[in-house]
Length: 350
Length: 253
Image (cartoon, rainbow over all chains, first blue to last red; front, side, top):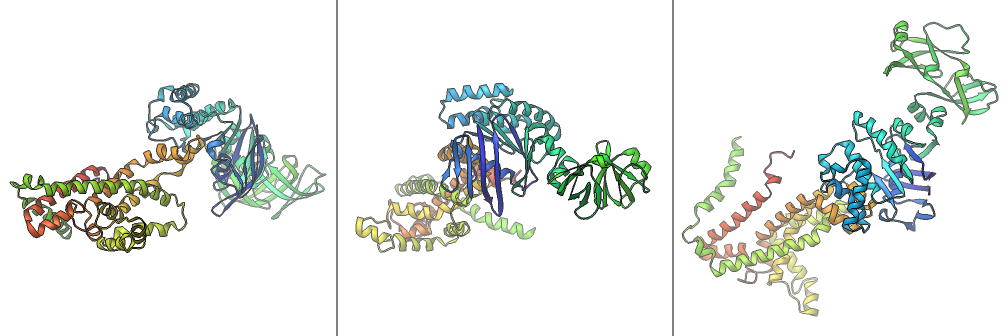
């Protein structure tokens, strides 16, 4: 099944404008900063949010066509794992999972059989009689997934499925979730603000900023060719915008860089990896064609490296080792020379 | 500290006086007299009927206010609370103007269907419902408000009908607030005096509830008034004990 989503929706003063498709057997991550409209997109697909215009089509079935058609959430065959899971606190784990089948008319016995099957496949059988307040965050995540799957939906939506978990639980639950959603035959769409979740779990990533899709692609494509500063920052790379002419990039806001692609003309984006940048105290003389001067404005430790922010034309972020930091004796305010080999700059049309 | 203790003494002394003045020897005889039993029966009947009406109509109203379904929710909330602040005798006069034989709606009902509410037991139920229902609505509205909408959303995506969502998810989750609201509403209905005597009068066996019987007895036999008052005091304390989880804690955890 394929989902076609082409609509606008608003929540308060916020506007969402979506035009994309989702395919069965594909795990799509909707990645975006807080307030970008990710949850509104998910709510619209679930039928919890009415559209201002446009339509949503599930396969052959038009579930939304503003303003006349709106199929209610009950009749959409969509399973939703909510942020914080929203398990019913007054019901046991088994009753939570059986709630969906019972709502859809299954007998008590059949609902229990279905629920037990779901609990079995997710390894939570022993939690059946517990209340949601008596289980851990990782267990609650599995119960929420079992509850969503117990109605046998064709579409599975997950709203920040890992955000409610602490860092340690997160790793293991992410691995489990990876297997669980890959085993699901229908469309899986999950919302996250965490690039790691998107990279590790998704086949395809949709980037949402201020209510519009700014980029779609595989995780690899996003990392190689980020379309916006937001994506570039998430991927940890420098993104430069400017005009290319005969192998020279005139960066917006100042600065001129040599780029390898001589044939590029007009508006382009260029990616410069922080690890491909070299920092020098004095003007370097060597093979690097791009050399420019700037001032250190920030130093941030990251794993075993240091990220150095340099204000210059253009401003960039470089990563260096602790040893290099000591040798260069860098501090905020230090004047520094930046160099980058032309071959390390990847430019592409906007 | 001293003014605070004065307040405490001020609030407690009348209650102690009531207990101290209770004619214990004649107490069983007084409260088992036909008049007292009739008033007690009428009080229980009308207060429970008023609570039931408040539940049937007030619970949905509280939900509408909490979910802000209707326009001008802020104004509506203020209007709903008006009977809470209104002097009960004013409520009684207002009800007469609305439902009395010459009232706005009452006149129509009397002229066309020969239906009258004032000076009937049904009138007592109407007066007490009018005064007591806001207690249920404001208590429960708070309960509905603190219940995050996402539980109802989750139930909807699981295929539950609006009715099933309300009875299987919403109501069980607000049960503590619902019980507190119902008990407060019932206690207020049981003690209703001003609106009842104004709208429904003071006829033994028909509209003379316990508070009215106390008032009547004060003019004839003081010990009867005290004995009946004690019964109402015991009920109030019983309500307090029933709600101890809500009001006796020093701070909500």
